[in-house]
Length: 163
Image 1 (tube, helix red, strand yellow):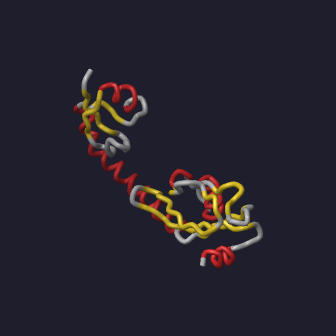
Image 2 (cartoon, rainbow, N blue to C red):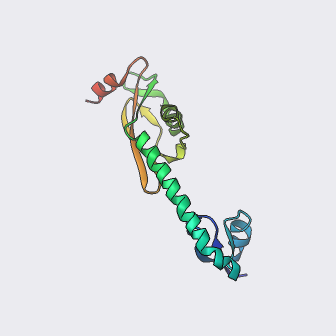
Image 3 (cartoon, rainbow, N blue to C red):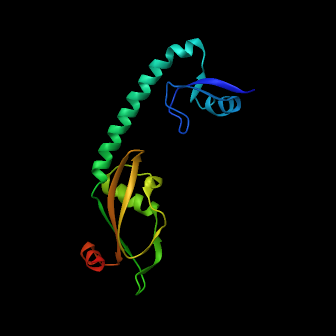
């Protein structure tokens, strides 16, 4: 069918922000954007609503950003301690995953943490201190520390081992 002009009613990643008009493939518009309420056909009536939708999107993004900044402030400087069984070489018998870190961070800060936002390339498999980053939004990040120690040890032992 070709391309269709649509008015985005919500932010769509890799496409645009609410209130913007984009030409997209007909199938993408009919089968994905419109059924999910992400866009409407760009008619004269819809174009009149574009500015209103754009303003609502800007207000929502500002609220989300303020919320992300507040959460980042709480997360920054957190120090999480994981006690694990490890061999003499310091290699863990298991691993500490982003899911484990998210659960412990959630308990520490009191709000929901999405494990996919924690930047951890590979599960942690060795004792030590790890400085991690969590991306709350594209341009809002918070750094925190994770220490993985032998069972019964604390931060002091982790810092001594790292020195």
